[in-house]
Figure 1 (cartoon, rainbow over the protein chains, first blue to last red):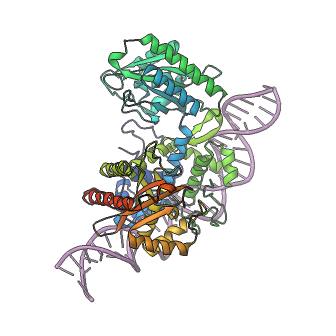
Figure 2 (cartoon, each protein chain N blue to C red):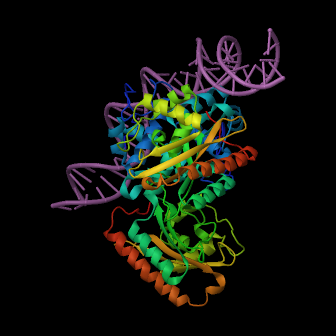
Figure 3 (tube, chains in turn cyan, orange, red, blue):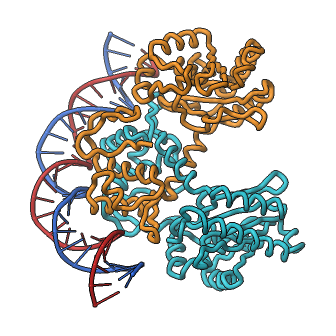
Length: 280
Length: 280
DNA sequence: GCTCGATTCTCGCAGGACGAGAACAGCCCT
DNA sequence: AGGGCTGTTCTCGTCCTGCGAGAATCGAGC
């Protein structure tokens, strides 16, 4: 999983395309602590010795950190197995974030209706800072979601219809910043993997206010999406549906107009609604 | 919500019955960082100034911490709203923990079957360190789970049948340690709230290998549970069902024998299975 | 242009984190 | 019981790093 490992001396030199962790300074202890946390998370269960070796932190220091983390409830010490695992605080934070992220219920109802109306799995996404987050999915056994998609942070915006809408809604510098943290990883042979091609495509998406994606995310599957805008006309989210590629040509106009209609509904709810997550 | 707030001077003095955060020492920065993280989590969204005031940490220090946390991906800085919220790393850790915690699929199948056979919502719980964790729930619209119950760490072991099994499976010192972190909060008028009464009850539970709970957790609802044991006969988990209280007297023997049967199945799978989470 | 809040920078001091090494605690093995 | 081994905690002097008052910058709103 390549946790952004703690490097004792030099840092940076991104591996799998991680955030270009700028050179280092600052609260070193914190970074170590997080490195520990992430290593534990990646391993599921790990001993103090292992941690010490993998992170190149001397044993006493590892124990000091571990004990802090255990005392704070972020780790548990399973004495029986001489190992450490994630603790209840981590669960609590995750839950809290989930609850904060999930789309408000009027929006969920809109998406559910969209799902029923078109007979396709339906999705809703918003920004969170620079990230794109899927905040609701509506599907059923006969119209299942795209399998790699799940509630939460979305890592392949360049390959999904709603991702393209969201990318298209960013300013150029925002998009630059985004791609410093996310690679254009190819997911199928048809995934767009070149920045320039993508930019041209996004321009088109932004002007049409609509995005299609044809087997760029999952082979044999197609998605369509439109933007949800706030009062000032800025894109703040996206409504999308997915379907088998062979159905995509049946009734594209119906899909498009339907998406626009429901996106309008969602916009209306969000404008009157509570705190909406803005762009960065 | 009472996040275990960071106290600049003296600490401790548990509020709502939190872990008796032993006197303080150690890596102060870490505690501050976690205090920030938890305050953000509790508030959903909060400004730097607010944090500084609530935690009594000078502004520059708050910013230092915030910037670290943002750089590490544990927070996001929503510049548009001058506020900070939880970041994607938190989500990732939470997800990782969820996946680690969830009961293995053979056990899930056993619980599903139990649910179908008895026509009652069914549950499976294990230890994680000193904590009790619900690792699977099986229910349906006509036999719904007890509403406050959800997947994850369980805070009211004294008031649920499976909680009693788990408590009964602990050694005396373990139980002491457990109750240093968890209060005997009354959830209904029938909740057992005295340590002595509970101990007597647990003794009975442990000898019979079976626990009932009658409207001690939710008014009008009853639960029954039996233990799941490892090769050495130690309790490592619990299988439980819940039902409306008025049904409880219909067929207690059937419920009991059925629970024992399915707990046996679960035991068998867990013994052959992979890493099972042991007691502390 | 002005004001007020948000955010970052400067810098000298002091307290705390660091880590080698040793000590202590269990556990297994025979 | 007695070795030998791993896991875990303690000791302690050095050194460094995080700290925080205050000032400087930035940026949006009017």
